Image 1 (tube, one colour):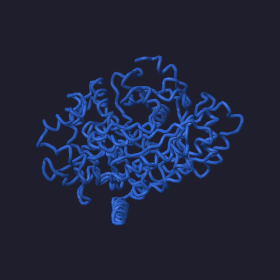
Image 2: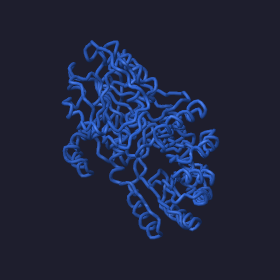
Image 3: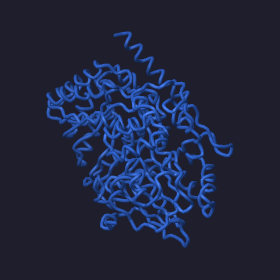
Image 4: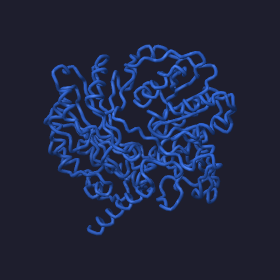
Length: 543
């Protein structure tokens, strides 16, 4: 159990005392405690559950757990990363629960899941879950629990049928998937009968009271940090970006009613504050918030910001961060190629990137991390070469500032305009090119594994046929070789790896998530895709 881990927690909410007959519920994060407790999403859902008197909540991680009920009625998972799927299966086995929903009886708990991973595309994991919650949990979570209470004493199928009527609650077994052939694309996805909704719509919370930490602990991956969500989604809408498209619309927290009170509450238990959001500095009152944090009474504050838009990295911001114990800051530039940034809708010029670096150094920061990507649809080798040139120009403009380029391979994500494009086969070579030419210039490159990007893409774009493959790959050791071995063993029962990962899909085909409605209709995503294709056709014709 490791009770010392939980004893070090400082709670910022008051858990309810469970009433007689409270529903026993286990809330799991499929990774180690230090990672799970650093997830703001996990913290918020746990606090919401633990604040209800009608629930008896226990937490479960891969390396520790609270006292677990002998017979839980509900088991929930918070999911945020594709490669954590193996831990889900391990935790189900630890609890002696059949891996597949179809094998469970009335005596087993209902297994539910939520989080960005399964909201985007739950299908590769659909056979392992009874229920999936799509979207923001602020209202959805309580609607789910309230509906469950109505049928708590009923049989399993009655429970699931009632839950399937709740907006945003997806019960995979009530949707029949047919295929053009065993190794082909999906032919149709249909509800099993007229009582089941034909489409399940992601739920969106539209308030201006966002999330803040409910627990602070030295055992977190970010030790003793108190996190405050400043914005949700991103107004830039880069065409590959799940964090923007899946979470629309862009929402900002109220400075007076939420942000300042939340920060004040956090400072009562820690001196480390993290401002979270895909584009924190685009909050309309960010300058005023920065002025508040720069006041003398906050001189002991240690401040960090998750990510900012490049052209908002002012010298004032850098100075405030440096005075508040930050040594570095992160900006997402995607590429050194203006041409490629036009294709992906990244409204940014190289001059702005260089100026951001100059401002960072002038403000007293010691290092600057830039996020880039290779293999983006429309990319040519000349675009990668321009990234090297850009990094060299930055280094020349800010001698002494430590530069790091974090670089990943493009992975297509559901509900984005680039969901139809596959992973570029040249991406691995392009990562090696960057490594060779940047390290020789004294610039640090932190490249994500190309092989694991392939597996991320497989799960990101997969359908239900992958469930058997995931089980096999786990059995064989969960390496890229294990996945290839599993594909070989299942040959003829599902498409090849290339179909899921590298192929550009037809805009006419049924997608694995076609029955799940995201923030934007497919017609809008197609328009945004065509805008990108038009950009690179025009740009290529002018070369």
